[in-house]
Image (cartoon, rainbow, N blue to C red; front, side):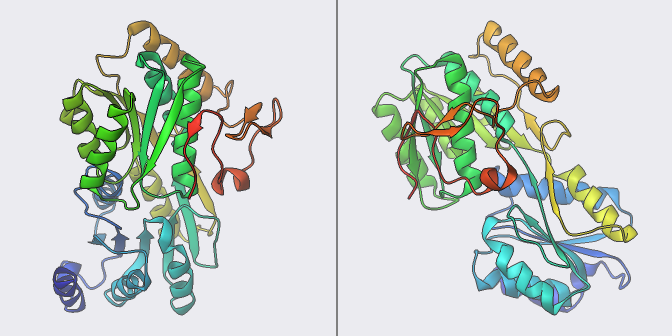
Length: 353
């Protein structure tokens, strides 16, 4: 809190506006540290890209802002410091952005995910499910036990989608593969993440997927234990070169820059903007040495089929964890079902709680 107060004082004094009162200012808010080498790092790389693309644009960013009324106070201080565009980058910020948007109708609020908009609040997201499916294929190709694990923070739709896509991809290579889920209850919980990794490996799991904001802990713990890991958000292969198979990394910068351009040009209309692997918003990380060459070829062929529209991850037939049909053969999943996902597919072990 002391560092936030210092930052807000600087903002109020205009120290973060670079001395140019007329420069356009864009704010970015992160739920965790910008150097987590995970989700928040991916967004800060997007911020840096935006700053590099627009002459005279200044960026503000505040890290470690909880998904509470605190984020509304942070956004308001940014507005008072001159921000005309604010990227609210965490799932729980949306209602606060909409509430504040009513107070500041001339400010554009861009929220990461969600299905709510208003006259000056839009959402953006990049569907990483295709890349997580392909990463799951890599996991399925190397597992010896057929038992995979997945360490995740909270059971929100975006995370549930990653778990399901990872599992479906693994089953494409190993139909009997299962994924055991462990919830940590926090985006940045290194001690719990290490404990979960060790517990899963002790139980016979030999490949672990993850969606937390501190992936290095899981990757390095898996490497020490001789297990494999699939990454999410940012490529952390250099921290666990033997364990890392591949991963789904985000590339937010170009999408953010397009949105800023539209707002500057007066052509932006609040909507649900969605990127994917096709437009480069999501990247399948390079393969690690443990992924067999034949498997790499199969995965790359499936990747091309996805890019060509010949294969759709979220299409039936699809069966739920309880054995009931989720989608009929050939039926695609609509956006509302996808972005409100509250079920596990067949082969996932654990509960959504």
